[in-house]
Amino acid sequence: MKISEEKKGDEGSMVSINLGAFCNQNCVFCLAADGKEAYPRLNAKEAREIINGYLDQGGKFLLLTGGESTIHPDFVEIIGKTLEDPRVSSLNIMTNGVRLGDKDFFDAVIAVDPKKKISFSFSLHGPNAELAESITRGQKGDFEKTCAAMKYAIQSDRNVDVAIIIIEQNYRYLPEYAKFIIHEFPGIDGVSFGYPLLFGNAEINKDSIYVKFSDIAPYLQEALKILLAAGIRAVTAAGAPVPLCVLSGIEDVSVRPLIEWQRRYIGTATSGRLNTLKDEDEIIPKVKPEQCAGCALNDACVGVLKCYADIFGSDGVVPVTVDNFRGPIVKGSTLSECLPKLDQAKLNLIVLSGDDAVPGLYAFPEGKIGVVVREGGEPGKSSVKSQPKADETPKSKTTKERKTSAKRTRKS
Ligand code: SF4
Image (cartoon, rainbow, N blue to C red; front, side, top):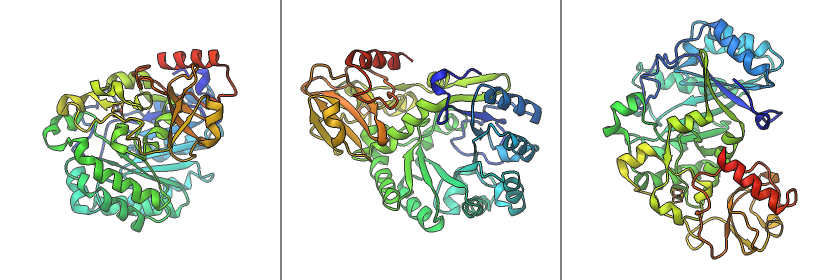
């Protein structure tokens, strides 16, 4: 694998290492279910070689995925050797938590991590055993094991996130799920909501699991607001996106992970192959329904998954305008003039009257983010799939430089 210069550095590249598409559950939407050939089981030596190839280029941030990486027979050895390497800054383990619910096994994992480089991303798809286990289709008792593992992880003072995939079976329970997470897992860091990708079991079960965004929207918004009010970092998953018009007034929960993902994520490595972010964009195509052309947030939104459009058309897609945008709107003639007025937490809609306004999604210092549109212009016409500009300040670049940068980012 090759890390581009722009993705190196202290807050730079992340790579996902797929140990193999084997699992101890069989989720109704599992995209790895037909991935046994694409993601064969790596042995410890192969895994080490891939990880070394990444570290040799200055990489520091690893994600470990599968299938279910924790049931790999050499899991503890693989992570132990990885964590011994001083070049590794962090190792995120993406897991269903079932094996980690065994306290002895959890302790064995933590024992090879004296410097607390491990973080955990658990999958949990409902607020009770009956619902969650009907989705994961593993063993009775799995829900309790995952919950136990999450508690062990929080007690061990590791960063802990939980992810849920929104499907027909669980979307009405999202607010209940949010309350359950707050009540059961005090100290949890984040919750991520994703939409199923049309691979593996999701393709087999597509008639029973896919649900319209117009149905999801009120439940998802309520769940996100409950979590945010409790101080939990609630987001929608960058790799399985929800369009911004479904997140009216809380668009930042989608835009921030997307910026992070596009800035830092290299791709998924497996035996002899790296699926880059660009490859994954091609494997997981997104489309913009016709009405997106008139949307003020077009430059900040990836649209909908093509599989969604194939099933539901443009259901739930409602163009955002200066009149119906519910977040902060800042008007001015230049970006410099608007910058101090931007809301720090939310996605700002920046309406510029000056001729040199370059429409697009901007990430500013201090974590401020905004979408620039031209006053009286045609929003969203400038680009179908733009990417965020990294920490670009209006003062740091000339207008010409900004325009060049904008073109470059959109091509990549
Ligand atoms: S670009 Fe399209 S999908 Fe995205 S927020 Fe606007 S209308 Fe919705």
